Length: 439
Ligand SMILES: Cc1ncc(COP(=O)(O)O)c(C=O)c1O
Figure 1 (cartoon, rainbow, N blue to C red):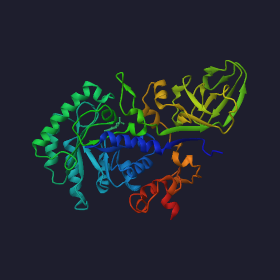
Figure 2 (cartoon, rainbow, N blue to C red):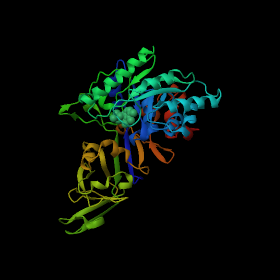
Figure 3 (cartoon, rainbow, N blue to C red):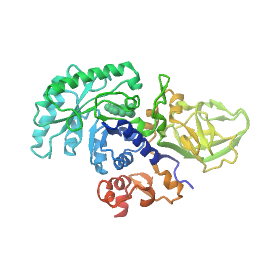
Figure 4 (tube, rainbow, N blue to C red):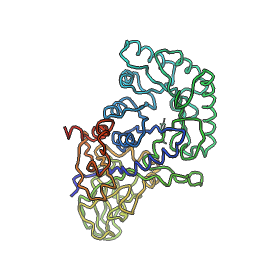
């Protein structure tokens, strides 16, 4: 008996596999800063960062100070960078927690300096900042021609420590698109200016970062010693860009599977209309299943008439409009389906799969949006495939209001060694609430 109406399985083995692929691609001379902003693209940031830290990743990119503080609170001890812009009211918290900030104006240099002075020696070390250069994304960052001026302002600020120079790429095709190379050239010019100021660039100096997932997979030989992949860690990359297979992307595995269960079933005669506005009527006598997951949970309303779900490993069409809390499926061709059966809205069900990209294409959006839209009442449930295979009974542990499923310490490998438990291994315990459960 499944107790949730709707939930998202988070496949930890897939996550670990994807992280290994990313680290391999980045090696030997680049480290990975994992982008976990927006609750790890909807996958559950605390969990993802904790697993990543276990896998040796020491740098994380977040959206804002509250995400950064959340990571610190579950024991993420390494580098955390607010990738976008912090707002003024967030600055003090960031500095107190050793959160790194991206800078894109002289005003921000000034306000940080003033803040450090006002904090009057309360900081254990200088705030660590990254110069964010806009080479063509047009969202945040300094235009490349103004970057040297702000670079100098940072270098002349004894209160601040410059630890990074970054830019962000606009083209999803990464290195396969000429605009990326244009961006790279603009960035190189800023780096040259930095070198002319006797700055040492690289892993033992000021870190240089430009590449996202697309750049990493399209083999760009961009200068840089840190890469910032996000989407690839969650298992999505277009397998083909400009007609070519992207090497390595076939090794990525989707991490999230969105599921619900059949809550109600009925047989309907030909001509019965289903859902709002009567947009679908049964062409023949059939069986309709009602599943308690709707657009509030992240099933796009525009999926009406186009979507499918997996029941018993078979595709059942979503019929009628998606409603706020429910979708209806035509399960007339799935013998044996019954109330309580698991329904997979996207992701894997045994050998069958509805890829996130299929849904994204059906509703004319990108996979990022589909996983980010999975709602807060959908529980994220970590699944370790090895543990499942061994038929372990999985204890359920709450993180706030999100129950998580973990294997036993030794079987799952999640809480495997004494030093993990003592050191940053506490992170998973905290991320999952296990620490308080065992105290
Ligand atoms: C500044 C920055 N760097 C890196 C990334 C990661 O990009 P991707 O998920 O395409 O790898 C993002 C995501 O939007 C970002 O905003």
